[in-house]
Image (tube, rainbow, N blue to C red; front, side):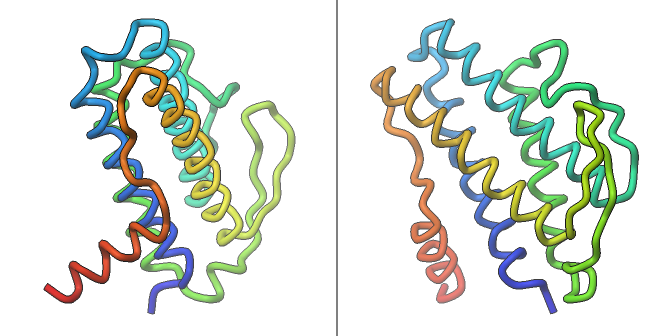
Length: 166
């Protein structure tokens, strides 16, 4: 049995992230260079944090000294990595049982400080962190005359119900 609500949060994160990257990809030529660099920086930060916490969840040292890449990846690279990472988080949450959700994990933040969180809290952090920065990107898209993708949990739940009914 999946670990509700973490499985829903990870599916929502995947849906919203995929929608955002599709909206950006369809409008790359309409986004000014300074704004596109900022979007890439935000996407890179989201991706890096997702990777760090994935390593934390799997008990691996992440080896990062910052919550961003030292060399800014291209948009296409970030979009591909986001798909793989989002799929990993959905699979992870699907297999996480109640005992696993509450298990405490010790880890190190990218700044070297010690960290200690439950697996469920790490998933919650990853979901909320991504939501915050997708909102930042949505504002940049609007500034460039681009309507961002739907990013509300209510839209996701409605889309899920529509798929289930089909």
